[in-house]
Image (cartoon, rainbow, N blue to C red):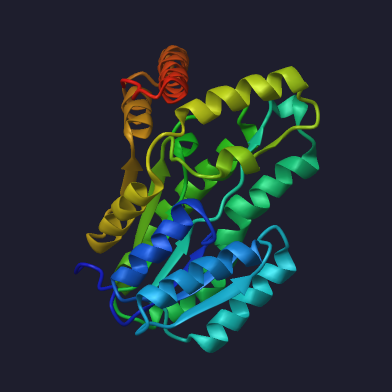
Length: 298
């Protein structure tokens, strides 16, 4: 399959109001793609669209405000996009939400909320927009899975289930759509610096002490720049890569899981604790440096 050509094609992108989605919108604008940007945060989405329009007046930028947890609204949005854009070059299913807590600490409604946004919405959008994608020779689909679509740590039952499902969905699509020259990339980011920590939910049965402890550890690991991650994704699209693993925090666990399928969880627990402690030390050092007017060392 030839490299993907961005310029002059329409790209549909979910979760475009912040984080990697925002950076993907900017990167696609640089590459000359017309954009259809989806998010539930209308204010942030309008700001991203305005920035792209200002930087690239020659491309078309449309916004669609939709809550992907709402099945009816998601289908309606997809059908409107299909009617307006019968030929689509790229679909990026980037939007996602997180939920912390053991399986016995989350309600079924909370579990299903994660599955609805992280897995069902990409399925609905892909299924509805597939005629427009197959109408364009050499189209491409991106599904943003996660590090937790490679490993399944305790406390991530809903999130990991949704991301493993998206990983499997991507593999099936890749095999089914290859004869029609439609590429598929599954993306597995590690600790990307986005709003995911502040927007993540926790299960109803999780204690406040557990919440605070997990949030501190989680934030400490979110260090990889979102703009760099976006560029790696777009490079993967251009070269039709089946998988894009972003940051060492995804690449190392992937290797360990394949080498030690039965014992990698214990190894990763030790590694994660060490990384969190190191990151926490850097943050304390940085604060100390600012307080004294000196630059903290890495």
